[in-house]
Length: 235
Image (cartoon, rainbow, N blue to C red; front, side, top):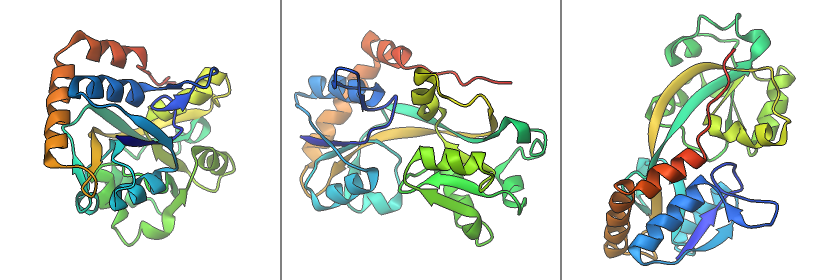
């Protein structure tokens, strides 16, 4: 099966030897091994992964939240891990925004503009916030996390939303700004594999679901999770 992947540490990336590694890559390999499938990985932007799944030119996408729109063209596997969603602000602004302890309070703070990555889904709770008319002009979408970080440092947005694992690349390189602060933890969201309805069958899905269940009951599962566990620093 052709699996679309995005360069996104620590979930899927090439190491110094140009080998494909990452939490999602290792979990998918373990799932496919148990299901009797072989993956051929193809790198592309996330928006293209969704497009190719819709037309069946790739079979699988990783690290996906389930939405009604995506269910029109994709089958969703059992959850194979969870991801956390947080809002990050500059440490120097933490005191200013400390009164924001819920998304509703954020929505009622008109001078708080929020950055997010285009094409990403951040779970049910945040999806409801995005539908509020007052929030629309305050949401700034960009293709890369680097762009959001520059906008935050420049004061063009007051925070951005992500899974804190996504900051690991900078920490590994020693370039993670030390002025970032987690303002708000939103939710834990189950993460699925997406299978194209155009080029897979229910049988493929059943075999993959059985493999996910088997993997979760094996010691391999926790060992893979522990290898990539990331604890954000707190002030």
